[in-house]
Every structure is written in structure tokens, then in C-alpha cells.
Length: 622
Image (cartoon, rainbow, N blue to C red; front, side):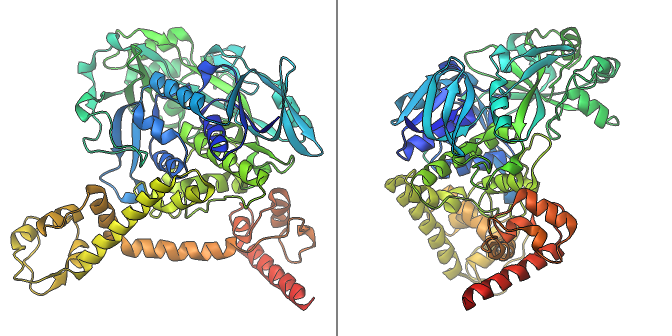
């Protein structure tokens, strides 16, 4: 018997299984086959806006995705570098074959982890608790906790036009048995849809008609343990092309043959990563759309056509691809398709990702209604951590919205729910200036250290880094510059007048365009580039950061007010009818969570606050 069984070898399952094993639990990972573990069935990349920060957070908590992404990247690129630090994040173009192989190697070497191949068919439930999984061949894998990370494999159907096949991605097996088992246990399921674009043979592309998209020449990485990356001159290029009027005409003329528009698709597709036919319909005024050509692997002669997801017939796909500049002679290696699958309503989850209906059952990834490798990995990590903590009878780890994008995502899911594939965006985080790429280790690594997934040496390095940042700020604050300091030429090159009175180096740094790295170089202060970069952000955005922290502290106070688990909201006087219904359905854990539920008004929150205070007074009197 195992302590924890994880179902699914995708990005969520990998993080859940690895973190549970690293925390000392005897863990089983059930997967269709070894070859499926770590597979990238869609885009060959890791990171992106908000998502890249999630990968940094996974790394800070002791997860694996960032390490493997760094080791197997074809290109590193920091996004939004011309914008503020709150929206900057890393994206790497991954070698999908190398990534998969590296993840499988890590799993093989992990202590306390056993891989079992098979199809999960039924959930074992004993006295309202998850007790393991029954496989399709009849084997019973018993455990004290179960984590479901089924991805797009649960009752899935692959669709190209009106052709519908009961199948997982790439023709792999699917099962409806697990869906039935969950429904029998009282879970609400719903259908979601996603898709993937065609892959073409790289040698058949004329890249001279496209625009090269290089990476970032500076050293950047997801993991703080990474010290070497692929040299910039060896990194692969991506390329930019565009749809044409011919592309749009082809799509408009054949909309009735698309799975989505012909009525074949029943599930809801992703709003923020729509199919190309959906883009043409929704943005009919746009004359063209960006299309990125991305290498898939050093081991493959294939290019991924990012932004060209479709479910149109194969012969139409051929014409559509040939209508793109540079791809007039391209040979399609793999056709695009849509896929529909079952997911559970995430309002049935606690903030720990444990289900409300069945104790010790956790779910993570696309089964919870999300899209994206990074969102899945973040959930898998948290489900694994919380499953172990519960078995060890320790306090759960629930990340706040001001602590992590992972916290934002999980809070959104369990508080607001979703009816479409959920994707993390920087706009979802009200405290995004606090949730930056550069400070993920400082925000979260202490949690990883506390639960034992961050080593002593790694923790000490993180502490030393914080000390170096604080020391540099102190040095800049104490360094006094006067009109006689000889920095006039330095100021003029940035358009500033010479100093007329004394000023600290820290206050000088608050001026636009000046950077900490350049100022330190001028003043002959020795510091590492990443230390100077973080000081630069902390000094220039100090006022905004302090304001965000104050707002977050107000929310924290509400999140510390715990609502009774069995509170009958219909008996709370003066609550609105909608508020009663939503609170009874979602059963928020804290007043803060209640305040974020759609349909619960500020007046309802005020009523609840008064109710809690009255209950506390009664308890004190008794």
C-alpha cells in the first residue's frame, strides 16, 4: 500500500509525484506508459506572461519544471522588457524530446517513487475517504490519498471537422470510466475544449519571407540552481509571419466544416488562446494575425505553427498553411485537431485542492478547468504538498494572492470557478508588482525550506542574496553625492542637469533612465548584475510596492477571519438571497475568500463581519 497515488504523468502529475516523494511519502505514479511522462502535447515551450513567474514559484518551492526547462531549452527570452517589472517574465523555447527524456530520468532516480503503467478506471472510496485507484485491468492500487491529474484524457474526443474519435491526444487511449466514478461520488463534471495547430517539416519552410525572433542575450533562467544555459549564439531562432486575406477567405468559406462552428464541439474553448477560425470571426476587422514559427526539437525536423490552432478538414488545413508567407511549399507533418474532455467544477475544491465531497482526494491541472503546462504544474505541486501535510497531520500550505501567482490561480478556481479553460494572466493579479519574476525566491523559498524541499545550502544562498540586496541599498543610501563628485558627464548623458546640491546615490537612482548597475559601476561599487537589477526595481518602484503591501495587509486581515465550516447562511440575518445561495454553494473558508465570490456584495461581507464578531463575543462570555 502506498501513502499517495498520483494519476497522470503530465506536468501536474510529475510535480505532485516528485514533491510527495521528496517529502518522504511512498508515492505511486500511474501513467499510460513511460513514454508519455513529461510529454508536451501542444506548444513546445515553457513560461510566458504570468506563466513564467509560476515556473519561478515552482522552483522556489522545490519543484522540477524550471530546472528541466533550463536544461533543455532551445531559446531563452525575457518578455515585456520595455514595460514595468510587474509584467516581465521568462519564456523558453523547449526541446520537447529532451524535456520529456530529462523528466523521465529525474523520475527514475527519485527515491520513494514507483511508476505503474495502466489506465485508471475507478476511484476507491472508503468511509468518505479516497483509498486508491482500480485500473482497467482490475489491479487495485491502494493508498491513503489520491491526486488526480488526468489532463485532457478523461472521456476525451479528438475532432477534425465532422470526424470524431474517442481518443486522447495523439491517438492515445482515453477512458470514460473515471468520469463515471467521479459522478457516482457526487461530483459535477463539465466539458471543455482545446486544440492544437499543425506541425510542418522545417526544411520545407522559406524563412527568408519571415522575420527572425531571437532570444535574450543576457543570462536568464527559471531556476536559482541554474548556472549555465545554452550559449546565446547556439540558441535557435523563432520566426514571425502573418495570416493573409487568402487565409481569412479560406476560413470564412469553410466555417461550416469546423468542429466548433458545425456543432460537433460541445465543450467551451479557451478565450485567451482561441482557434484561428475563432479569431477570424471575433476579430473580423483585423486584416492579419501574428503567427509564430517555433522549433520543436533538435531531434525533429518539425516546426510548430503557434497561433494557428484549428479543427478544419485536412485539405483545408493544407490550403491555409500554404497561404502563409514562407509556408507556400510547407509539408504538414501532423494535422491540427480539437480535443474535448471532462473536467470537474473547481468550486468543489478546498483551497488546498482537496475535494469537498471526498476526503484525501486532490485534483490538479486541466481536470480543474485550467489550460497550460505551467498552471498544471503549479497545481500539481500544491496538491502534492498539501496531501503530504495532511497525512502528516500538519498545517496545510495555502498561498495568498499577494504571495504568488499560484495563489491567485487557486483562489480564482475555488472561489469564482470557471466555465472555460482558465489561463493565468498578469491582469488577474491585483498585487502583480509584488509577484515579480525577480523576487519569487524571496517570496516563497522559506516555505520550501520549512517543508523540507529546499536544502540548507540552497536556503543559505537565498538568505545571502537578500543580505547583498539590503547591503547595496544601504550603501547607496549612505553614499552622498555633491556637485564636486564628478558625475556631471554621467548625468548629462541621460539628459539631466549637473547637481546643484547634495543627494544620496539612492535618491539619484529614483530618476528615470538611470540604472543601479551603471551607477554602481560609476561609483566603483562591486555587485552582481542580478543584485543591482533587483535593487533598481525596489528603489524605483518603492512607493508603488509599499502601497500594494498596505492593500494586501488589509486583505490578509479578512483572510484571517475564519468562517465556521458548517455555518447555515440561510440563518444569517440581512444576507442577500444571492449571497446566501453563493455562500452556501462555495462555502468559503475565510471572510476574505467570501469577499471574492461573484454575487456576494460588500453589504453581505459587512453582515458576515458583524456576525463573526457577535459569535466571538458569545464565545468569550461562555
